[in-house]
Length: 329
Image 1: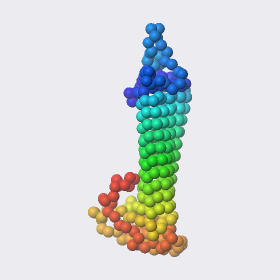
Image 2: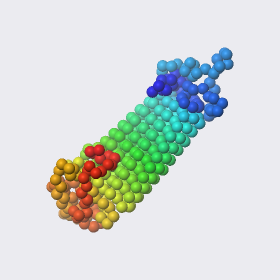
Image 3: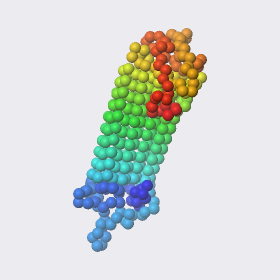
Image 4: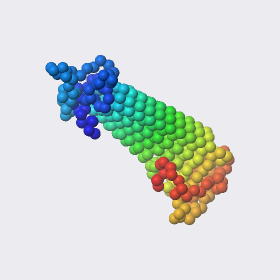
């Protein structure tokens, strides 16, 4: 990024920096006082000098920096080292760079990028975007309708308040929607997904045959099951979606299906394939489970308070659906 190039000299010294609008090389105006007492040195003529003219300009810092923005829209980058970056007010762009960083967006619509290392990102107020990138990161949206992407590594993400969208990326991730009507997709790896409170869309279907643990929580949720997944619906009238992406020996396990309020949907390519043959029978080894076979292939084992029947399964053309995390979307 252009603004990142202007920061390389600043990063060489480490320590603490307080800035105003735009980027760390900007001078402060009378209307945008820095947070704290740090001052930019002056030349002999009394003119304030740009930071880029005072510091080496070609080497990122290997120190642990503390960078803080002001009331405006700030661009802050940590470089190497374990950095702490605070955006405060305004719509800020924060980049941790290398190593294990802590980023705090503050108020405003912020974008936080962890970079390499195991980073801690807090969006705080506003509709924020949090990108963990590489490493096993912890990401917290807090308030607002946030977009959170874990990236590589085994990440933990919490949406917080608001209607949030969470993507795990690669790795074995744990995603928590918390409050609001959230959308969660685990990505590749063995993920654990919790919708939380609200009417959530929770998908484990975008990672092939890796087992995910998909939990709806409270509210009327939509759970999209991938191969080998384990689903727990929780409270509310939930909709469970399975499809023709389930092959032999990839059966899904549903823990608490309530046929009096939950709905089981089988998505099928009805445009090019004939209607599937659906069979339901009790599991002779575990009577509390019903086994669902589609065209002779076991796709579901359902733990239900009452025996499941084929009439409890709704057949739907997959072309009529438009959901996050479906294998064909």
